Image (cartoon, rainbow, N blue to C red):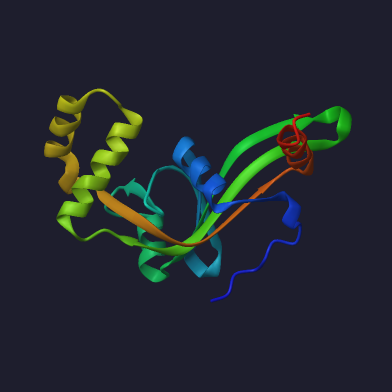
Amino acid sequence: MIFREMRRKRQQLSDAECEEIFSRCTSGTLALLGDGGYPYALPISYVYANRQIYFHSAVEGHKIDAIKACNKASFCVIAQDDVKPQKFTTYFRSVIAFGHIGIVADATEKLEAAKLLARRYAPGDEAGMLAELDKGLHRMVIIRLDIEHLSGKQAIELQKERMRMNMGG
């Protein structure tokens, strides 16, 4: 599939900038095809590694049903949302990943992804993490989104500011 090109190319973020945002941020919105063909978008925590995004989930529910029914998804992260009421605008920076999503079946990958998630959200407690995974990993589903396309955009004002900084001003 060919993904649309961004119309306002001056505001486009590079892949490296998109990946930096995914690495830095901790939550976003996962969009799936839900029941009856309706979009199903949910806020969710994640971890980014090697152009893949990992999520954890309960064993059953709307999200799992949607993933099993359609393996295409998008995931959006808003890295900046600075409302400027006096200018009637928002200085924003956001990224959307598109790709195929599925439940991780490989036990080794599942454990490693669960460790990545735990280290991200509870850093510094390796013993606690291992104990928690030992008792609960079997009740957890790990989901992986393989990124096929990244699209990042920022407000034109942020782009102009970046250009001024690069020019030494």
